[in-house]
Length: 239
Image (cartoon, rainbow, N blue to C red; front, side, top):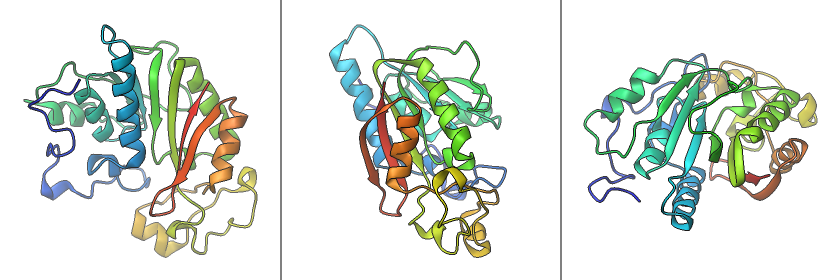
């Protein structure tokens, strides 16, 4: 599925001067533009498996809060039909990263808030919907409503790949709402943590069962939930 002359994992989409790009609006670092993590890799493997099931139909994917498109580009390289969405206008960043690359088809970019998806989306419904490092910027009740709305754009047998910053990660040090239930948890990080991680907005930090409960409240089943080495929470869910 991946072109033989395109190395998904080693392709230098960003040069050394841009290894620590901010996501914007005080929302941390654009990690996906630097590397693929375990959840990104599971998403890519899932898309490969969907293509293997039906080689006549390319899988489709929606990358929410895509930033400068690191995971978008990896999914495009896998041959998926990708729609990328972010509240910031990163369309030009993605196009620059694609310049001269041997890809099957460029992604579609939409500037929008993932809490209110457009009624019609390119390549919908999707085999995979991925949203990394963003859901914690919503209050818990907003997050449930957002994820539930995403499922309207998911194919039968499709997967949602979702991550949230962890309550027991470094970010949770002196977090003022750490003793509250997730539904009441929404606060700024301790000043040193906020500065260190460039997160200047209030967040709802998650434990593993908090994310499971969110997905169940959004009427999704949970295929797997795990912690990253840093302590962030990752999950795969299905209708």
